Image 1: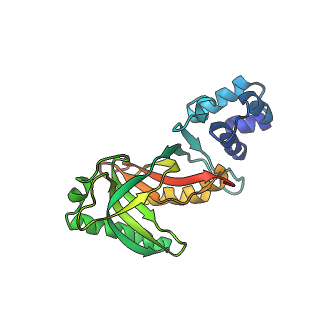
Image 2: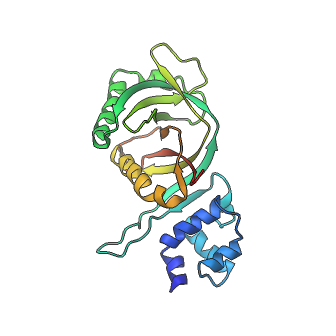
Length: 243
């Protein structure tokens, strides 16, 4: 029953396996397979590839895309059936330039106020001016939340740039950090807001990582943001638990 549970549901035990496999452990794949009830490393490898699309050994490489499933709870409904696609990457320091506003940490109010800020920048014709300053990765228009003290934060609509900051714009430095980078697919802002909730409430508590002292970043690519297949990214700064 334990083996069937791990191979076919990948619930709470699978979350632990993910942490052991990709970057948090040097434990042998064969030892992990036996620990979680598999008959052989081959059986574990087959089950792992079915879920993640890569072999366990490949999953230890930085930048490999993995899937996370929050623990399934057997109550009146089953939770955790929807996957989260993400990868882990280290990034060097970079500068962002653009426009910013200061907010109180009021999640529901911010879900209304920040889209209005984006609308304001678009209506004032500042988006083309902003995009012209883009000169380095990550490419795309960025939403950057920084200076978070638990009560207030600054939100930037910005681009990554190596240029001198133009008059009328502001800048901030994003420190070198490790990032969990999540793929978001769907119409904005609801798809993004739902993903952000899930990252904090579902993924982070079972990931083996903690929030790091760096900005949160949203990376917006070209395309119709109201389309159901629109793609963007959420970058969460992380560190290993206990660091």
